[in-house]
Image: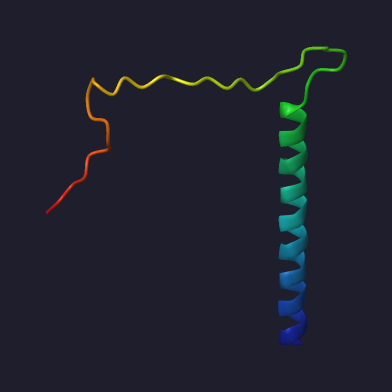
Length: 65
């Protein structure tokens, strides 16, 4: 009887965890989805900053004990 109770507890905890995960996942998808009818597309932009070697350190600092 004890093994059956432990099995039912594990099963109910697993089902509860899956339910919570599903609700949180759906909430995340809904909150990050684009509004219907919006034609705005976002593009990633790559920006390159030029480094001036003559200002500051050209190499990262190394800490030595």
